[in-house]
Length: 162
Ligand code: OFO
Image (cartoon, rainbow, N blue to C red):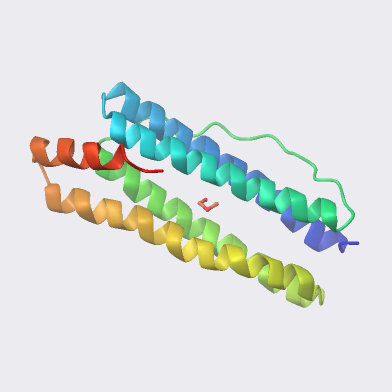
């Protein structure tokens, strides 16, 4: 059975992952509005990935004998100045999620919940990848600069994300 503090932290993290899914979905709709279909597709895949993170956490809470309590999800931002601004925000967001996982690991250590600490290692590794993927996109967009053809080439590439 999970300790109440760790349980509370995991519940909040489920909420944070569902918010991430919502945030990326909002980014997808922004790209839809610009007719950048490849970018929109990339964001939808990302949104689904975030939901899968929420499911993985939920399953763990259940396996440890507690029921996940879902909280309300705040409305995400829906407008940006440019595709680059979207990925810069996504990068900041992923950095904040990484900090949350670090704190959650610390919390589980504080309460000597080693099983949760081990379980959370997967998320720590995943966060390295999550930060890198949005940061790489921001770097590419900075290289492209004002080039419309560069933007469309990248859009075509992103349409292939599985
Ligand atoms: Fe679930 O990693 Fe992004 O937010």
